[in-house]
Amino acid sequence: MSRRTRNVTGEENTYGGTQGETYYVGEDKQKELGVSMFTCPAEQDLSEKLHEYFLLPAHKDDSDRFALDLFIHYNVGVNKDNILCPKYMKQVFETYGIDVPKEIKDGKCPVCELESKLQDKSEKMKLTHTKEEKDAWWKDNVAPLRAYYGKSYSPEPNRYLAWVRPALNEMDEKDIQFFLMSTGVYKEGVLAKSRNRRNEVIDLADPDNPYILYFKRKGKDQIDTKYSGYGADAYKDDAGEFIPMYDSWFEDVPRYTDILNFKTYVEIKELMGVCVVSDSKKETNDNEVETFFENDLNKEKEEAPAPPSRRRRQIITPDEEPISTDGEAEGDDTSTEDRQKDVDEIKSRVAAKRGRRVSIEK
Ligand SMILES: [Zn+2]
Image 1: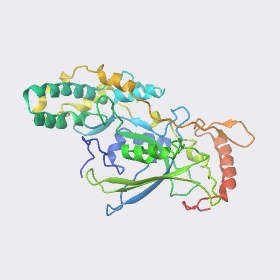
Image 2: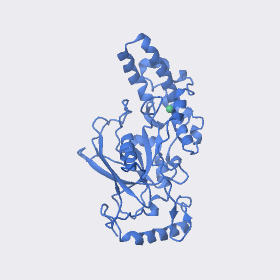
Image 3: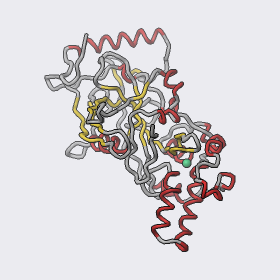
C-alpha cells in the first residue's frame, strides 16, 4: 500500500483518513476526549462523493478561527512519521495567543535545521552545477523536508485542523469530529465561502446561524485525487429562518492542544536517524546538523498577515446570563443534566423548523 507523501509541488496531499494522520493527532487522545476523525473518501469506484459538514466554533480558550494552521513534516525517518514542526507550530501558537505546549517551548526543529543546511548547499550548487541539476537535487532533498507550502519567505500551512460535525447523521446526536483539512478545502471550501458578494464576513461557524459546508472528492492517491464543488448553504427551515445548532454539538469541543501530539527536539532527532537524507547524501546526516534556527524565515513569517478571524458569539439563553460553551464540566453529572434540559428546550423550540437538506428522525 502506498503511503501518502509530501507533494513537493505544493499541491494537496491525498487525504481519506489514512493512518499517517494519527502521528500528530493522538489516537489515545481521541478516545479520551470522545472525538473522532472526519474522513472524506471518494466512492468505492473512486468516483465523486459528496461530503457535508457543519463547521463548529473553536473552544472558547482558543483563538476564534475557523481552523488552526498546521505545519507538518511528512515522512520523517525510517518509519516515515508525520510530525508537527516545533518551530512553525510555536510561531502559530504565539501568533494566536495560545499557550505553547511544553514539548516545543524551545521552538527548535532538527528537520528545519537540516532543511536550512541543505538549502545552503543547494545555493552553492549554482556555481558548480547546471540549473536543472541543482533544481532536481533541491526537489529530491530540500523540498521533502519542508513543513510548509509556498515560498520560504512566506510559508503557508500544509494542513488545517477544524472542528466539524457531519451533516448527514442523526441531528440530536453529539458528534464532534476533527477535520484535517487540505489547503484546498480550507481556502476554497471555507475561506472563499466566508465572504458574501459585498465582501462581508459570513461566520460559517455561528451556532445560531449555521451553514452546511460541502465539497466533492474523487480519486485516491496524490495524482488523481480531486476536490471540487465547494459550497456553503445556510441551514434554514422552510420559512427561511436559521435553525440553530444544538449546544451539545459544540459545547465539548476540545482545545486544539488537547488533541495534537508534539515531539521534542530530541525525540524528532531520534526519529530522523540518518534516514532523512538518502544514502548518497550521508555527509549531511543528523550528527552534523547545526543550528540554523534564527534565520530569515522567522522574520518573514512574523510579517505575514494573520488569517481572518471569525467573530466570537456568546451563547445566551432566553432571560438568562450568558452561559459557558466550553467543556469545563466534563463528566460532571449535574451539568450534564442541565445541559440536557437546554438541549431538550432547544430541541422543542426548533423541532418544528427542521430543515429540508438534512434528514432528521425523532
Ligand atoms: Zn520543522
